[in-house]
Length: 465
Image (cartoon, rainbow, N blue to C red):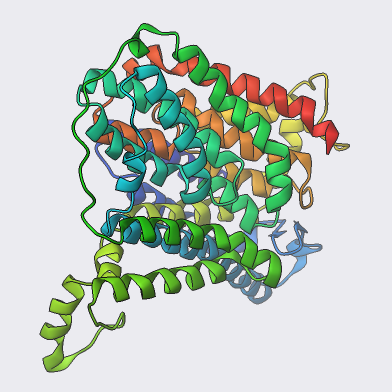
């Protein structure tokens, strides 16, 4: 039965990787994979000899000798545990995405566009790379890429010139997302999973991530594509008089979340919901519309719908990428099924024994640097979310172990090497119709250099902490 579950997982994974070829949205195989894997676990529970307790991060003793009812009870408890952990991530992401959409509703990001005063391509490259690095740490790399490419479309009118900037924005955004607990979905998973803390994450990864952005940008600034000047339009005025205020309020509210977690020791989604409530309150005050977030029935429904149409919160919630949320649900819960059977736990041991050790080991149990760097290379080929989810089940190290910080860096920045390897790359590909092979020839080598330099910097600096 274990073999069947693994086959279902691999087939689903393949369908996710080839979504553009088979013309099937990746959320569909992710949800099918989740449901079928757990169904097979429940149907074949009496055939399994081991069970992995995620809450205690160890195998359950004497699982094979338990009666059917006790095994099913354990399955239900484990399923509920994983659903709760997954829901923490999804609710957190929903809050962050809504705040960003509220900022966009007030055209808050036009404030950033006004910072670009130069016409030199090299200067614009550095401005957008630095903005991508900083913004992705605050509002996550996916959102930062969407925002900056939207601004680029107003600043650089020639698409052939603009896609070069977009390529470097992808590298910078992924590098910026790696050192922040809210900068990348995978880093958020490690943070919420209590594998990394905010301060240690910044200590370990700020310098490697910075080099991962600076080195490719520096090399690119000498390329012919970034020589000369561009034609710029006259500045456009913001659509709302409150755009700057909402930008700073929204970004400040998201930055407040790690502080709230540190003070209260509550899960991050609690702080994110508080931040969302505060931002939504000001959004409603500024938009001067009265409404209730909850739905209403009866004769007031039509009037409510009209009010909601003008509500910034309702407008923002309607733009949330629900397919992405459901994809994360499916993939995380499918990985949880493999973890619960102890498959990932056993795979970790095999991996560590098979892969030869490099010069410096990460910790006393001997997970080699090569294993983690291969994880980074793997995240360029397939989605980094399930890779990190798998690593959570494969390794049992405690909070702030060097292993988790290197995984955060590798999975976060390794995806830049292919345009389909990260959420930032995929969204840029969609917005600018960037060709896979164009990116492979023109940008991938820069991303690889950044990844290797950043990894080397991590190996050197980790001894300082």
